[in-house]
Image 1 (cartoon, rainbow, N blue to C red):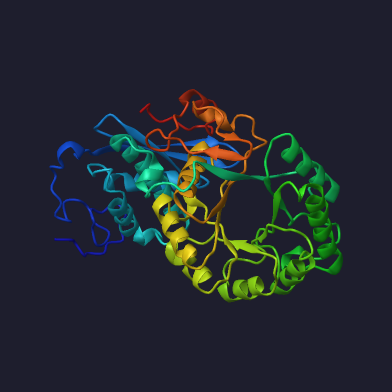
Image 2: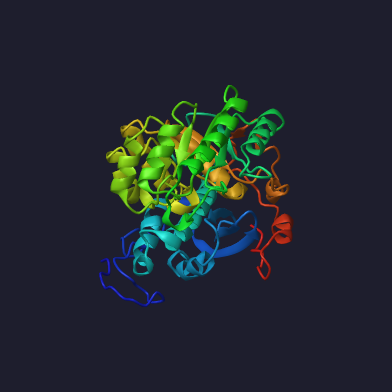
Length: 411
C-alpha cells in the first residue's frame, strides 16, 4: 500500500504519497523491458548560461541525457532525487515524473529550481527510453506533425540601444545566416530614463522602443518574422502605450511586457491591443499555465521546456493551449540537448510556431554533440534515431565545463 506519511527530511525514505514501483504493486519482472536505473549524474557546462546536463544510467548499458534550466542549485537537487530513481524502470516516464514531484513536494515542486531539476531528469528519461525501445523521442509523444522545426534567432546587436545597430544585425542574421524569424530586446537603455525601478516609461522612452521596432521591421520585415522582448520591465500603463504605439508595424509578438506575478494585469494588457503578446517562460507546469490559456491572457504561449516541467508537461501545456487556438513558441536558452528536446516536442504538437535559439554568437555551441548541421537555414531537423538523436562529445563538454565540474561517465 502507498505510504501517506509526510516527513520534512528530504533524505527520508518517504516524503509523501509514494509512487515507486513497489508501493504501486507493479511486478519487478517486466520481461524483455525489465530495465532498471542504476545511477544519475550531472555536469555543468559554462555556456551562455550554466547549462546543467543530467544523465540517467541503466543496467541495459544505455544512458539518456537531459538538461535542466540554468544550473544553479539544480545539481544538488538532482543528487537528492537520485535515490528515488535508482532501481526504477526508466520506461515509466509519467509515473517517475509524478514520483519526483511528490517526493520533492516539501522543497517546492510546483515551481522553481525543483521543477527545473525534475525537467532535466524527465528529458533524460525520454532519451534513454527511446534508446531502449529504438524509437525517436517524438514517437514517445504520439508521433510528429513536421520533419523540421522552425527556429527563431535571439539577436544581440553591437549597440542594442541604437535602432540602426539592431537593424544591421537583423539584416546580417537574415542574409548571412539564413533565419526567417528573429527576436530583439526592447528593455535596453534609451538615454531618457528618470527612474527605471518604477517601471514607468516616459514618452521619449516609448518613442525609442518604437524606433527600434520600426528600423528592424522595415529592414527585414518582408523576409522575416520579428519579435521583441521586454523582460517583464514595465507598468501596465506603459506596456499598453507601447503595444498601441507599435500596432502599425508587422510585429510577430511583444514578449513579457509586464511582471509575471499578477495574472489579472497580464490579461488586461494583452487584451488592450492588437499587437500579439507572448508570455510563459516564468510560469511552471500545466497548472501554472492554465489561467493564461483559459482566460486568453496571452496570444502566444512561450513555455521553456527544461524549466517548466519537461517534455511531456510541455506537450500537455500545448494541448491545452490548442483548445483555445493559442500557438506555442518555446522559449529556449539551452545547449543542443535542451534545444533538441524542445524540437522533439515542437514536432509532436500541431500548434508549434518556433523554438528559440539563443547561442548564435557562441561559436562552439554545436561542438558539444557529435552530430553536424543541427540548425540549417533557420530550421532544426528532427532525427529519426532513437531518443533525442544526439551524442554528447565528452571532450567538448570537459573543455567547456564550469570550473571544478567533473564530467560524467561515458554512456
